[in-house]
Image 1 (cartoon, protein in one colour):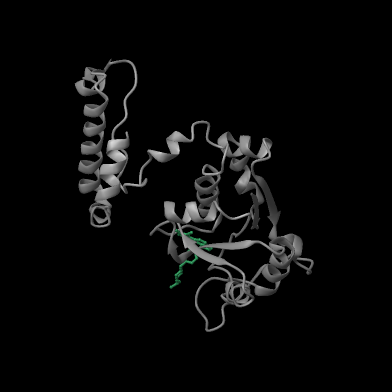
Image 2 (tube, protein in one colour):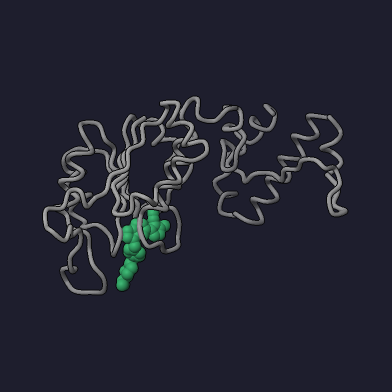
Length: 241
Ligand SMILES: CC(C)N1CCN(Cc2ccc(Cn3ccc4ccc(-c5n[nH]c(N)c5C#N)cc43)cc2)CC1
């Protein structure tokens, strides 16, 4: 997979040189290229923004600069991803769908956002465009959201995560439940012991205990997920473990 990121803060994406995503890049599993939007400006001040039509606070990012940049970077096959507070909320389902793409291009806005005609233009020209938000809180730009989405998508690519098994049993997985509590050595820490069932070696009981803790957590912390619960998948998933 090729991923291009266009931003006025290229250094913000340096974190993608680290850890799993960094290793995936070195292994050639992920071809990640970060571009400075100002490289497509034509004035001596390298201007990327202007005042909003209709008035209001702040500045808006210019469509002409973004258009020349994206025309260069999107190529024939790029799927344009625009992080925005007004986007569809990004979920694991979006990560799974984006992980099937050959080429993603992330447009990182700043200020009050990117002129709306940019996304419109590429959608109208038949290109896949996803306007996505990573959650209901306000950030200062699209770079942090891009880091989140590139990691969520990158870890799903074949060969990136050492044990593909671990991609199956994870939060918001097939059964739609939150993760159960996990423990490791020492068996006693600060007078806290390990739940006995986890020391029993009885796999069916351990699976049932984990399923019950995941249900409990989901009901307490994310009751919204309970409504969408796929009970059939839950039992199948549970019996498979
Ligand atoms: C009334 C009037 C003064 N209000 C002024 C604030 N407006 C909303 C507003 C708020 C902040 C930004 C800054 N910004 C620029 C590009 C950009 C991309 C993503 C995100 C972003 N924020 N939160 C997420 N989950 C995001 C994602 N993904 C934020 C971005 C842009 C826009 C709403 C109108």
